[in-house]
Image (cartoon, rainbow, N blue to C red; front, side, top):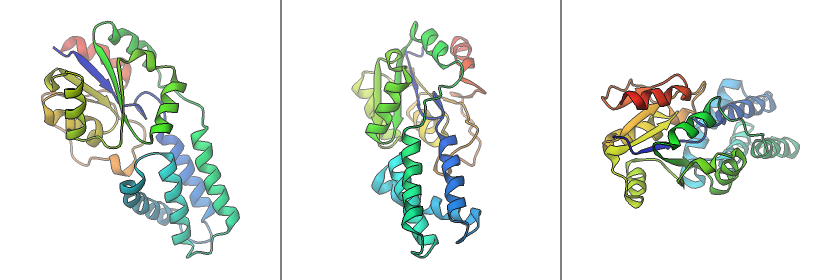
Length: 229
């Protein structure tokens, strides 16, 4: 019996990664005079991976990584005006309108009648809190956790704190490394709903074969999956 269904937030309940991709494309245009678009993306990925350890996940850290990558790619020649535009791109991401995924509200309402629902998201505390409040979805969740990283230790701590056996928990998300694999390792259920694009540090190159693993095309399929289990 699955008692608790936990959800990821970004790119599971609402769109996020598309905003990052659009911003990265504009950064490549700003740096046209210094490098090819592919080189800009590679450098930004490298800088962002290193900076995650210092800044964590989120738009603020991403913006700082864009500035650092731009300075490195241009060998310090980038203008103050271009730096200002890069910072403005980050601010625009923070102010972007919330776009809820189709079917999310109906699914949460259905599942909330039979299961305890949790929201487990990682990233900047202020940014994630604002997204949750703006989404209007907070009332569906009995527990909301904003964490700096998602791994087996994180999930084990959350489940223990809230009196949930991992074997009675299901985690739903778009990232195999962050949302699915750690919970499977703990003995729970993992549901992968792929998003149209995936951040480089959330990609998993190998197929997952596990009796408690399920992959869905869209979140609207989740109630039927739970009934079948």
